[in-house]
Length: 169
Image (tube, rainbow, N blue to C red; front, side, top):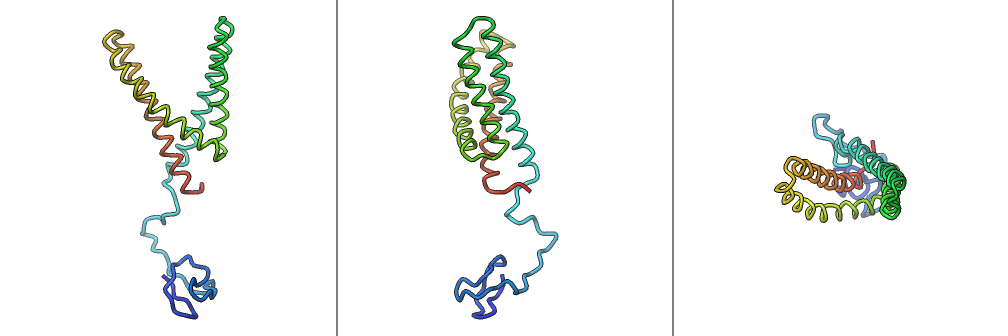
């Protein structure tokens, strides 16, 4: 805390002027920060940004893979399903690019889509667990994939929230 040079009011260290008398506090000495104290609240953990960019890249690559699958399916003659996969892949790739460039509308859409993926993924996970009875080892792999997909979607929501609070350093 610092004191206003004019009215002696207690002010936060970051105040540029007194909120009571409007006197400038730019010349007031600020207390030195103890180097042993944890980082101030304005910084995010060091692992948040690399993971955010890694998952944004994963989101974009996943969309591009859907686009490639569209091309492969169209060569086999599945025009309608291939076209739908292509559109979804293209949208996913563009949203992944929006994540990489921190474009807020894209981040909001991805947040919403990840929430939907979690909701529908829980239903698919229940079906996959039931499917283990009929498909054995393949069913176990499907359950593990669904769990990974749920974790990635949940973690991406968390990372979008964390990166909304802080600017990259």
